[in-house]
Amino acid sequence: MKKGIHPEYRLVVFKDIASGFAFLCRSTAESKETILWEDGNEYPLVKVEISSRSHPYYTGKRTFVDTAGRVDKFFARYGKRENQ
Image (cartoon, rainbow, N blue to C red; front, side, top):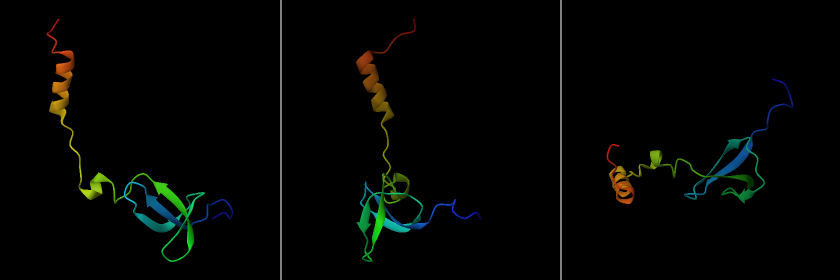
């Protein structure tokens, strides 16, 4: 492996902004923010939109779309057209 061309792995805290869940792992992700972790050390903080704690696939909280209701709303607004 060539020296000086690979990013450096370091400990980084990833925080899910949807659920507030945070975890510490090694990463090459860059961040300007820092956070004081449970062990008393300060680590770079990377905020993520979604993680396993907030993703519907992992939480089992799936939302179903009422397609029949959408079709009825469309026909109520624009009316049913006959073949022309």
